Length: 257
Image (cartoon, rainbow, N blue to C red; front, side):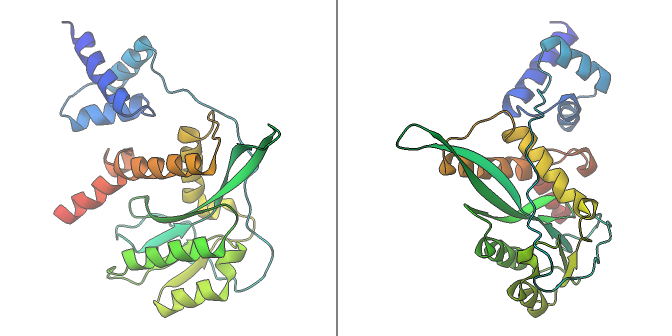
């Protein structure tokens, strides 16, 4: 067996388990397996095998939860300093919208919406909690917030929770629970998506890999797909910035040191 054929089989095995891996992540996985190979060689074989990742560009208007000043506006304490070497010290959140379809009694296609409210640890980009609801929901956000507070409670440093200026993050109940737990509240500046670009990037990656190019025909089907993707993203999807580990692998690797 020639070297390219043997390497090709290993590449195909990686892609079979990780359908969204391009040649860079395949190269990173091979390195984790102890296989030393040039990145351009991996790219060439991926092209030869015809297994490049397909790119869908269908996009919808970005969901905005901003409704003006309806409560407390917190200062921007993060100020785009998204990196931290301390787990659970900096948490960011936002809400995004998905669409799915139902068929009514007359056979007509009805567009429905679903809302995802994730909380991300900026240390390793892990989604530590999230809520899913059929409409923009304060309760969904509060439930995910409470779970994130419990998960991060052992942090040795004072925590900061960042968001945009969406109506739910301005609520007294939201601000009070952060104050009660001695957590700094931080908000992006009005109309400045770059102040929370890490979460915007996550939404883009997620929709690219499990939403664009797909059609979901029920709420339950879409919820199942979202939960499956978040588990995959946390536990399997490797990142070069995390030394070719997934977010969970990176966190556990730190604990083992």
